[in-house]
Length: 442
Image 1 (cartoon, rainbow, N blue to C red):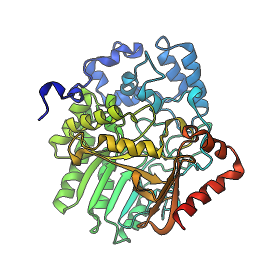
Image 2 (cartoon, rainbow, N blue to C red; image 1 turned 180 degrees about the vertical axis):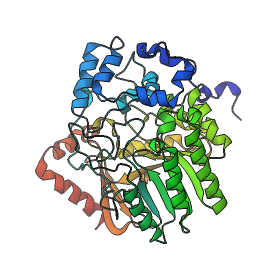
Image 3 (cartoon, rainbow, N blue to C red; image 1 turned 90 degrees about the vertical axis):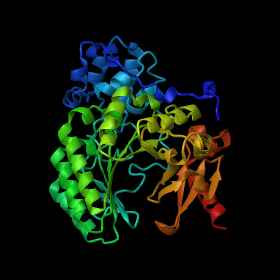
Image 4 (tube, rainbow, N blue to C red; image 1 turned 90 degrees about the horizontal axis):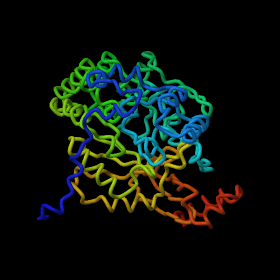
């Protein structure tokens, strides 16, 4: 048994009080107003100029110029809630882990990896109808809409989520009942489908009646046994669970009707850093807990955000403290414009070892890589071959394609000089991948 003085209980120390009033624009906002989800949505910042105006006096002119440059080159749209903006430490914006996730600065942007494609996971290639990705035999991903309560720099669906930017013209997956019905028809006609993830965009953005409509349509299909509503909302706008009773009742209704039918209906959310879990978060998540709604978390590993061993340990324990089950930690996808956030496969494997045993096994996530090219999820450490000089990891995914090999490439700037030099020569690139392939297929 550990002596009491050696046990770290910092995971229970949640930020509380009117912390948002440290932002001049919110200095006079009382708690009731701040906790109103409608106020949060209305006051969310959606244009770089709005952000610059809000940050005047908090940061240096040089930082504001850096932000302006970042947005000129970013693939993702801007949307930041007042709540999220208030959690950023504006005394050190360059080092703050939340700022890194949502607000780009030009000075840290790096060239994209040569192997990057905009839809790196090939979700559209596995879509029998628009907005429905069917890759695994018994599971499909339903993209109900293309908006979110905030926009993450690292979004793997930057090909569709949000409005067009200077860097990316996007495909459209707006709310469209005809498109929805085509997805439902495919699901009804595919009897081996049992598991549907409802995402987007973000299911938080669905109106209550839309959430009910989707839930009931899927619950009416006899072979569906599991539904997962995916949302980042509790991490970036938790007050919706406190003040949007209609939405919470709609979710609860789908969960309860599912339970009566023998169908599991759960919520999957997305916290990346312990600073995202506040006293408001705890109150909001308790609303779901009291209603018997299971909440699991899927984090994305990001350099300078949550790749530190102590940071990840704290995140997992803090999530457990507020009754959220850590489920996955994703290796960062090859996403346009965020090479500065990616980590190396080797570092992720070491991080997985470091967090194992910090808490109960069912509260310890699986560290996975979602394979470029549509190979699906594999344990990070399960590669067939990994060359730390070239940064190429080779995986098999026998339940997706038995004979195919899939390649994940580490960020070039993290490679040793020899590896960086080889990738700098365009004619060498195919040879690097061919070498990795030969190392597996002998």
